[in-house]
Length: 365
Image 1 (cartoon, rainbow, N blue to C red):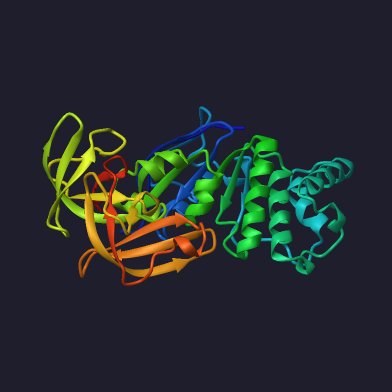
Image 2: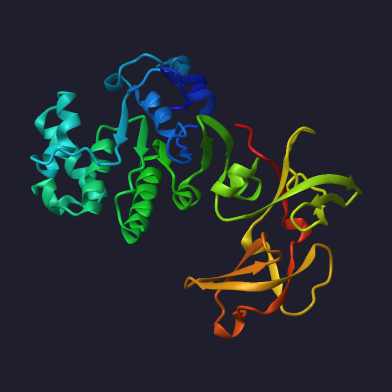
């Protein structure tokens, strides 16, 4: 296992800055995820750790060793690619054994290690089969086995589940986590899928436009986003524009632009992100925190609206309420049966609980 330390890393391709001044410390044995949309710099960062790219500026360290310009084959990292990068003309055994053969281990040791790792990924019965005859999920397990069998200090995974269907993705998430915890390998995972990031990670780095916006645990990132980009990218949220008005011991008051009304927010660090006086402010409230009722509601931050759409998704019911012609708020509840669903067109009351609002600045690009 290794600690990965990225010190002021910048990567430019001509006039384009793909990654800008990135500082990260990834702990030994940690499952760390790079999350963000396409073109945000997450894969470029992973490739600098792997040695496929060298940074334009900055230092890459594994433990205390400077690895900035060390070639990929001398970094002892295992890589799992989005397209698996298997050799279609080879068997499962030959694919998994490839890295060990490059290391010039004896045939007996190679066979022992390959059989052992194929048992771990539950593919030992396919050891002599051509990889081209395997399903997508099985090919992904072969790619994992090939990366793990060389006993890497760091395991790197670049969107490894994006080519699988939803059920297979769920299965492979569990499989990757099981293997990572069993081998205790420092693992760096790249994805644009928020569910993968939230369910698998010890910590997450959220990227946008080549800049790491926030690093934290899944609960920190979800409950305390640092700006509107993070709030919107991690899960669903309702975002509205606000301006600071005043504060008391218990609450901060803001002017809510779209509803031309005052909004009260609990005076707590979990509810109010750091911001400068020059920042444009927004309030974020998750759909599961929004209260919608056909009966009048007591307390602060209550508004009237009309139910526009009710969406049933199985485990949950999403209710969209129009507060004005331009403001539609989403509320999400666990499915408790048709009798609890609201009817489209009904007048309802909507409440934004003060303790569930997060005040955040707009992201500066």
